[in-house]
Image (cartoon, rainbow, N blue to C red; front, side, top):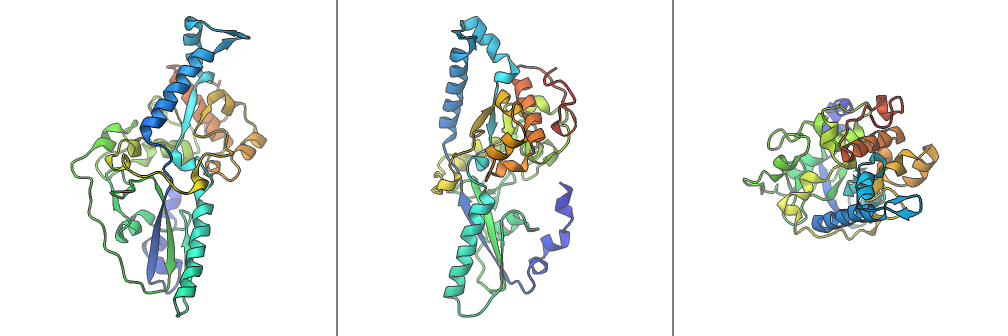
Length: 318
């Protein structure tokens, strides 16, 4: 993600982003949907249903044939990270922040300038959020809150208003290292350190080229994104579910999980229709299909050769 280095001056000084800026208001918007144990149970049921309902023609298979179906890469199911289950959070939060700016203008007598930022402006959101007291940056490099956990989005308002700063929050990670131990690819190289080149979220969402064959088996059944370091975090156990209805799965046929064959059969029109209004459009169709091939190969216990940018140069499974 070399683009992160392009606007270094802007990222280190918000006054370059908005001349005269004095404050940054940071918000956290929860998106957590279902406790992990419920999702695990549901995934287990899906796998069991796949065994039972696998068919040869119109006839139900016996146990031996069902086992064979599980080994078929195209019958595998790929998971999608929770943040992408609902509507695109950029749009949802941006609208709310603009309403907040309007409310500030009504409440504050002095004129001021403001710029709304939701993950797209050159702003170091995590560091600013920690400085503003939204939470602390945990060992999994995400902002954590003792009650909200980490399943939340960040939004910011850069403003020329001079506001009293909030106090930073103490680090509550303690001696816990669950996230480091659970990371499938070893992307969390040490506490508070991540090698993005190994992160499943980076590989499935941001990486435009072929994925290192060494990492492919470690990616498991993640089709888009990864929630492992959040799922194992103790602070996410008691975290309340999101109240925002826009983050619930609705309309996107690929969430919360999708079949490998379903993804491989998609064309550009299917992709655009399925992901309309979804943050999943960050991944192109060739990337999603590249990811699906890896999910299928992992389910079948095989290695797969993926063409450049997830294209179709190589055989789907080898």
